Length: 285
Image 1: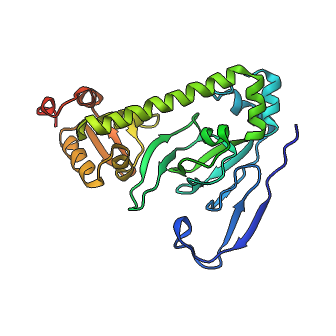
Image 2: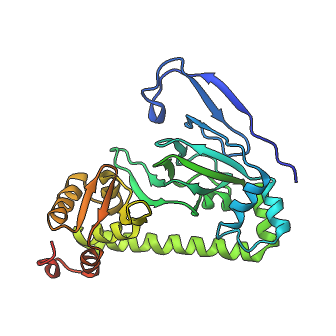
Image 3: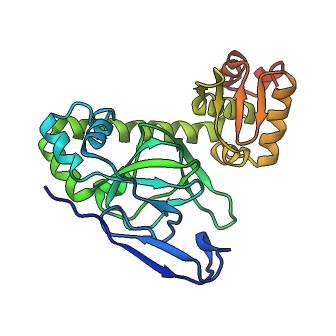
């Protein structure tokens, strides 16, 4: 199955509103359209060259495709497009046409929805090995949320017309997609319950524990997230979130760093996350 390379169109645009606000007049912008999911807001990105062997390795190491036969891996590899996206770049916006599935090879992506007052509802922060864009891929309707690169990212992209036939032929892929959708629905339900029933410390502790990973360089457990995004995830202002984090920092449970929070006492946060009422937290705040 042959897959073409999407056209790149270079043009000049004047400063506009929304995602392109503040861009100097006359600055060249790359418009990426066609087979990798065109998005008019994408800037400062390019398609890295990927050998067929690299593509096959990426697919075999992804949990969604790892059980495919060599024949199907080769078939998908012929249609995979690699994409490098710079930090803070919009990958797609809510309402954009959706015809492709994205998988993260490196970096972190924020999935959110904008509001009229400028406060985003952050649904998730996802990293290496995760996929996104699956809802629009499956139903062919517009994107349901924004996707923004939190860090420099390496992605690979598969088009709907290449993916759906494979799903029909391989029930294992369809089952994996169902598992992914169910997991997302469970987490959305849990997030709604937390917002309705849990106090700020409990919501914050659960979010930090879920978002944190072990840093290979420092051997510390760290959540790479800004306090603004963290507040949007738990439904609180940045000021309230910062105030609670400062209390925990004084107790040596966390350490605040630029662009992230290091967890120093996971046990303390786990105790807080298990509490369901304000009264039970009197000794843990």
